[in-house]
Image (tube, rainbow, N blue to C red):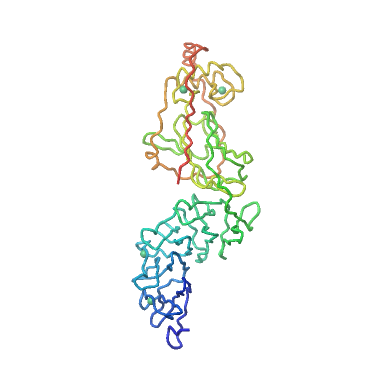
Length: 463
Ligand SMILES: [Ca+2]
Ligand SMILES: [Ca+2]
Ligand SMILES: [Ca+2]
Ligand SMILES: [Ca+2]
């Protein structure tokens, strides 16, 4: 058509991309290694811009078209810096969109056009991240702090598009899962927590005409096999916290769960003014009733299986549970609750009202709950429960500090599964004398009922 590199030397056109009636491509014209050209039927082939005279411009990665413009990765400057560029077909309108990585190259790869923007992966100082750009510097930014998997064998084939959604392998909390992005921060999330299989033979993901995504997964039950994800599987909502003050903290999901251990760990933190202490995972046992969609946390590592009095925050990270279709908990779910032995009515005070509750059920061998005064979790209300109450009589537990004060204390994720140690023996009846004196001074019945109000606050954190 046109001998761009006049004579027998190659111009080697690459990156051929039609935009409307224009074909863009990169070609050599000795001594220049490569520059951006455009062809139209009316004008023939013309140089658009030689970004890096004498050297390679185009890095050879993916190109994409969005908003009627060409997006590509080009070298510029000395030393050569690979960043995102866009062109409207004019020399002046061919510009570096943003110097995403100030020192060194961000090397955008896997450009996908979604709506009027491009979604792509870049290398940042923090690792490989997902970005989007609309061709302006302000409209070019990170979509999530999720880490993208490094290119296997140097081949960046970790993304696929189905409709207006890009899918990619993302790693959070040490576990790689299937993520999606529609080019917005809100629309970038984990969609399936399934064990992806890495391979040096891309592509890892393949869109199917029906809108489904096929990929290779590997798990210990079936090995490395073909998996299918169907967009539209309803995401798993944050569970509801159920905690009456006693030895078990329960999380109830809205559907049955996959009967597999989570691949990421929870964090349980005791928080107070100026401190946040992680509860070691080995002191906690997690039981899963997959069919009922319930996770039960118990605390065999503590005396009597009861957490020490205090304010607690538990974080179930994205991917901590998944349903039977593979849909994961898509974002961290954070819950605050408090433990105060003897506080039957859960008003953060141990006082006469609680003693009344206990007294009304005193000497009942079974079938009682925390609200009845069973503070040891054995179903009975008896002397052992009275000891718990007496040890704390006339004390109160303050509310935890505001979230902003404890955010900095976010603990490192704990291993997902840990052996639980043998339960520690319950406390001895050290306070027997005091207990009896307290009990003897209070009427058993006819006391005014205390206001009962559950205080465990479930607060899924928005993202
Ligand atoms: Ca050049
Ligand atoms: Ca740079
Ligand atoms: Ca109380
Ligand atoms: Ca009891």
